[in-house]
Structure formats: C-alpha cells, structure tokens
Length: 297
Image (cartoon, rainbow, N blue to C red; front, top):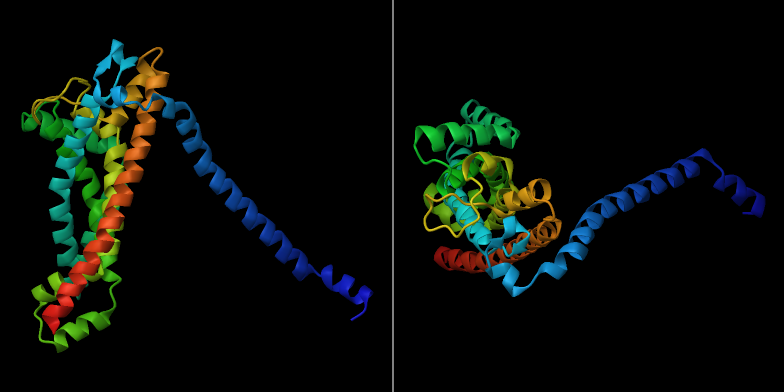
C-alpha cells in the first residue's frame, strides 16, 4: 500500500471516531482519578502532621482546638459496634431467607427486595428523625450512644441485606445441585457451602455498611449527641469522629487543624479496617471451604 493510500485510510470517519472515543475515555479516567486523589491528598497533607500519640489518646480541649480525639474514637467504636451487632444478624438472616428458602417465590421476594431498595435510598436525615422520635423519646434512651447505634443499624440494614442477597444470588446453581446430589439438606448447604463460597461478596457488603456507618453524620446529630467526654456506658451521650469533624469545621473558630487531623484519622480507620476485613475473609474462606470439603468426603 503506497503512502497516499495510507494517508486516506487514516483520515476515514471510522478512524477519527475511534480516536475521539479513545480521547474521551482517557479524559474521563483522568478526571475520575483526580477527583479521587486530590481530596485525599489534601486531607493527608493537612492532617498527617496532627497524627501524634497525644492526639489519639488525649481528650479534646478548648472546644476541640487543642488536645486530641481519644474519647471521640471510643464513642465511635461503641456506636459502630452497636449498629453492626444490631444489623448484621438480621441482614444475614434475611438474605439467606430470601435467596435460599424463598428462592422460588414470585411475590414475597420481589416485594421485599423492592422495599429494601427504597429504604436504602432514604436520606440519612430521615433515619435521624426516626431515631430521635422512636429511640430517644418513645423508648426513653435520650441522646445516647445506644440510641445512635440502633438508629445507625436501621440505616445500614437495607444496604447490608441487599448486598448479602446479591452475593448469595451470584453463587452458581451447580453448587446447590451438587449439594442435593450429596444428600445435604438445605440448612447444611447454607452453612457448609453457600456462606463459605459467598464470603467474598458478604465481606464487600460488610465493608460497605461499615464505612457508611463510620462516615455518617446526620443520623448521629439527632441521636447520639455532642458530648466529647469519655463515655462510661452506652447510655451516655457520645460524639463520633464524623460529628466531631463537622463541629470543628463549622462551629469552632480555629478548629480547622484539628478537623483535618480527625479527617485523616478517619481515612486511616476506613483503609485499615477494610484491608483487615478482606484479609481475614480470604483466610476464613480457605478454612471454611477446606472444612466443608472434608465434611463432604
């Protein structure tokens, strides 16, 4: 092919369209990566210098301008722990019920899943108002860590349930057929086959719910309160890290440095917990599948 022919081929509309599409895709990827990296880099640059042992262990002083976030971290751990303890068993049980025991239902399963999708899209401030009315006032818990954790559990429950359902639904039907051929009943199939195989998807759902709980602010503004002292029980008021960041950034003059430090600690917590859960799930899956195979033999 001579040079003029190659030049004409390079100027065809198809080649130009392919070049333009490639340019748009690369530009979109660059924008997406920058949108992810720049905020994190900004927080790291301004917050990393605040990360000292005293900042992690001491209590806030001067309205949060000085001191640390020790009591804030304890309150956050208690709130998130209560929310997961309340939501995880219900979410996992509901997912197993919908995806295994009611798998062939054409009425119940679609209605429940549609309801869960609607609840997952409800704004967090609505859950906050619900928690304020039900847990804080009707149940008499007041502004407390327990009320905040239970309300947060209600908020992450539909997210956990839907992700757990998706993880279980993605398991190939060949596994269930093999379990039936081996004579396993449905309960044994769930515990020794379905859950071990689906553990990676279940882990992804757990990380999603956990990170949502750690970063939530609006729900806790209505339910757990603002107290920044060390909590003595779950009935005490407690301030989460996200609420602490909001308070320092909006209501405390001169609190920006502590806000950046708290945001950096929150990012570290999210990253470390996510890595720890994924690492543990890989080890647990290998152990459970090995045990299940030995039981099958």
